[in-house]
Length: 278
Image 1: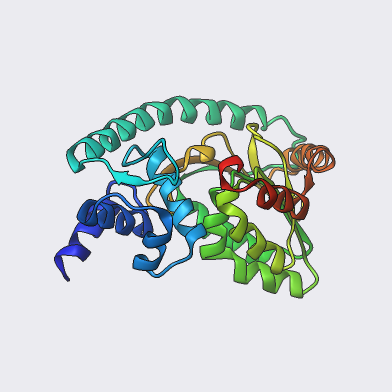
Image 2: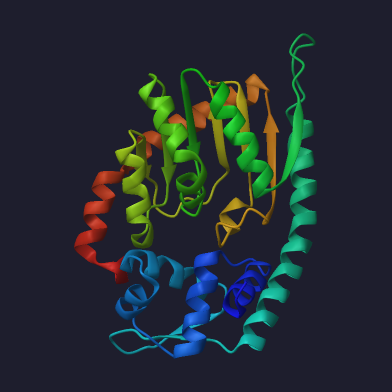
């Protein structure tokens, strides 16, 4: 393992994805850059660089210039890691609050007929969420739908899109709603190409959920806070096979579906506006 590999590995332990770690290390070593030379040096697409830069800016590890063209510079390592540590401490405190909220939600959903005993459990990491969701998808027969933050399209692309395509090719239907922004156009297009039906709901901030065949549900209130595609990230996701809850989520989804716009329309608008508006 080279020194660069070790440095990148250590950065991922602070919650960065491998792409984020590579880009941050490149800026540290070679100084401020615009997206085009970064894409060339890292041998990737410009859109991918924009997406990674946006995530690093949110983490406080990269600063953009105010002039045009925008130049991106790495924040010094000590300051960046201090910010990461403080964020993790804050997230752990928030986790305790969210845990209590989800436990209360779980209790509320136990009001059912005696012969309709449902199961509930809390998924605590993105690795567990991905594993359970793949299992749900494998057992699904007709349809699954979701309302998710755009960051989860990264997980979908990495872990689900091939299985999703097989599900659709076998006659299944997949629909999801998200807030589509410019850095995620390529990923959304990948989902459309796989046969999924995607719609845009501007700045959606309500409950995040998915339902498989009207009987298996996953719901959360904090997944929108995810900032990378790391499986080690901690979350609080409620899993249940409560069909009453599934019907409630289904009715909510259909209402949001009617209020949203097709992804193709949103992508055309973003491409016309350019990255500064997306």
